[in-house]
Image (tube, rainbow over all chains, first blue to last red; front, side):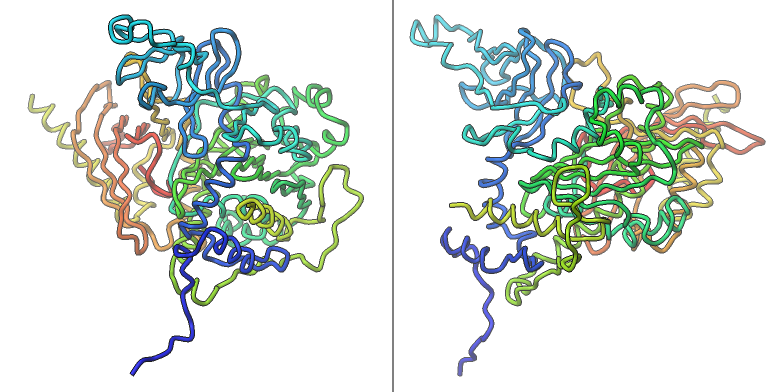
Length: 440
Length: 167
């Protein structure tokens, strides 16, 4: 006797590429606020993401202040590929593939430093920090005249800079960085062009068994979670209870980018007072007006950047802190977080110190806000791995705020909703994500 | 010599006791071991070329605490909404290689290794945080208090989801 199973677990790994794409289009319904759970951990979805998003988008790799001098470099990762960001002897910034052109050895294994040349640990091929191959041990003996060094320089990766943020892309056909960023630049100015900014130290890194998408989703849309996830902070009286994180605007600027702007700030101006003239000079009047009232700003630059300006009272002083992080995918169900802290270069030293300390206390790896977020990312991702979720097509609800209309009278660009308890930005983020991974 | 052995013993026992209090989640008793002026610092480990340079940076700190912020962290853990430690991690602190580096008046500078095993919830894999400490302990009325802690982890990219624990 045989039993007939009425329900089947869809075998995504046995589908053809076009069947998989069709399945995604059939099951992910951003406009209806329906996001199926399997997308948060399925290896087949991850493969598409790496190919269609992380090999194609502009990704953040460094801030210019990390490599101020000739010879300075940092090593970073881009779409799973190690790269060296160099400030060359000629003064130019380059992004070089960290792969020796002879046999593919990782050329530089350091996080940062200052070097004129990079020597491959395998056979000693020697490259200038401009990428040019200048030395091969025993060249004459082993190659005679057959080796043309000029064809063997390090591969240069396309890069561009906005607001001192260095972005790179592995896609030579990608649209310009300017076009990719679009209207989010207006808000990036508030974070990184309001004054000359500099990175403090190096990014700290830690690893979470959660998908990168939950980081971006949380960033672009989810002020609502602060009520409960960060309820401990309210219990201690560090933030007012209830709906403190509701007030302000949720803004979508296109291409998967958006933000939540918390304002007004009842605690007053949270930036160094001595820089007010610089802010006024560098920002548009409307931007400065927002800065004056800003309590916090949480920006997602798709696919995986979070930019945060937050403020708190520490040691009797109202102080803001500014950070940038990436949710770097390391697998279908895991990510590495890298977090940079930035300060106004010309702020008083005591203010800088306080700002750094506020960031470490709240949003670093030990941060009392930060640490509770990683529980959500981990448990949602791990839950989604069960085949039961695929069998039942378990779908999560992203319908918050669907009854609301955008406001027309906001000074900045984008689709703007009054108040931040809304999931409009997540719906837009997942629409953009779906369009990218299902593009033929 | 005998004095040195007694001091070594006292300091070791203090470190073991401290580890026990933290592993038992007895944070209030742990806090009692801290001096009011405590500096509690965790620099960033980095991959660097030159051996002459330290392979860490104090420009980036993973912990940057004093007695006020440590108290805040403890009070937060006691709320019923500190999700990062609900349920609490099971931790096992192994303190070893305790070396007294300097004795100055009523203060000692002590180096030790810490191997911190952390098991979360139902996870079958555990997080390991390994590193080196430099502590300064001060003897006040016969009791040792922690005046400063400096903890340097061995990983440049930490294999733990957060630092909701103490090091």
